[in-house]
Amino acid sequence: MFKKVNNYFDKLEDKIRSGLSRHPIIYAIIGGVGIILFWKGVWETAEFFPVLFGPVSAVAGVVILLLTGLMVSFFVGDSIILSGFKGEKKLVEKTESEVRSEKDIDERILEKLDVIEAELEEKK
Image 1: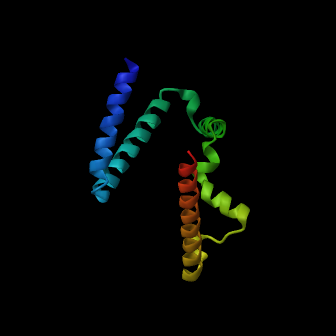
Image 2: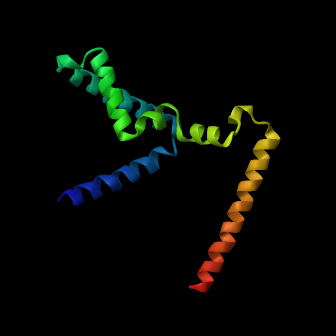
Image 3: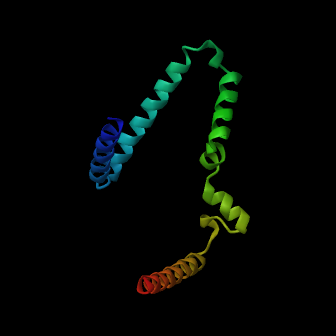
């Protein structure tokens, strides 16, 4: 039963996303409204619990984010962390030639992967 309901909503989501992706501004507005309404509901629900005010609420949120692994990825972002490890510049600090050079390298890597994939297919 759950699987059927899940499949139905999964297919419905795919159709809606496909249609909305052709209209990015409308998609952004609908998405923004959905996010605001979700957080409004969370906020108003939290008000039913007197203990969830002020610092307790903040600490509970931090604990939830840390336990789920979302704290760093949401507030900082994986790409920023990885670029820091690699010592890379931020995209806005790179020159056009650096960006083009990275794009060329990425394209060559993809070409090599295509060759490797074709060789693997031949061996099968």
